[in-house]
Length: 399
Image 1 (cartoon, rainbow, N blue to C red):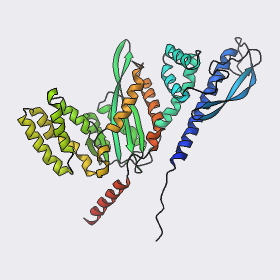
Image 2 (cartoon, rainbow, N blue to C red):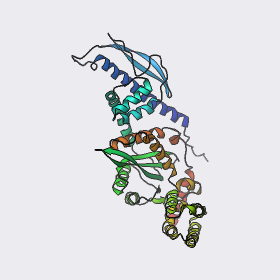
Image 3 (cartoon, rainbow, N blue to C red):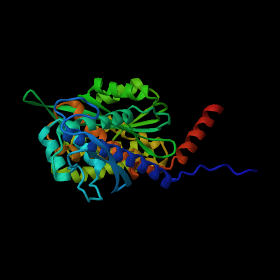
Image 4 (cartoon, one colour):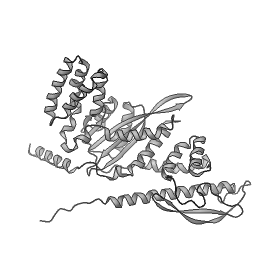
């Protein structure tokens, strides 16, 4: 009997390939900056006829720059009359300060002239033209747009949804704009950022747009959707992925219950709630939930008891999946951590000029996270899921 072939993932090779792509991106960006600076010194673009021209190109020389992702080759322009004293990279400097991250920040900063000047001065000790930075970072926008619209060829049994509200300023009035995010775990156990869109508001219209966006790119065969109880989200998920089950985030459910009880009783009620989700099966959890509701009524916490009676069933869907997965699929915590990272990066901005700039910075940050260990390390052992799925199919076949 021949042994079954085993697919091995060479994580080191994947990381090496990713670093090479980032290195090429950094190299292209810096060379574009050098060319733009040479155009400014000449007073005209290459081959452009202009009365304002002060000098012409005389080729270039190559020099290396050591970055965190490897050596990049720079083509430093030479001019016929003027010395080319670049403000982008100091003459004898050989290390950058996270160029990739800086360019992501500068895309957003391109909306504000002062912000561009502050960033470039902090990085390179001299101010780069905001117009130049804006033009170059437009290419970064195109890459992020392509990344956001990649086809979803793999299957993602577990999908998490969440949204974040950011401030925007329009005509002197501060309003909010929502950025909606979805991540998934594929059949091999790896996480992927599936989608990020501007939702306007976290309502049904916004979530419908997100669901259509995912379906059009190929998302299919979702087994479990994990989220808080956002009515628009739940209704949209039922319409677009009717076969998927829904898991209400346990942590969000606890917070909802705590909101209707005195702060002094949060700790004992928390212990009662945790006892429900510590049960070994769904049936035992429902029995425990009824007992907890009865106890809460005796404690004069009728609203909390009612919430448990009406909503506890929505928080137990995860118990129909492999036991080893329970801790990671009963809450929205995996996505919550990413949302906190977006919040941390956007807090320094304050108010965005529009929804697109908010979406761009959030997407740039998520794209960066996707290329780290977050997306390279196996998150769940999906062999357990596959065995359960196979067993269920056999039961259906014999029924």
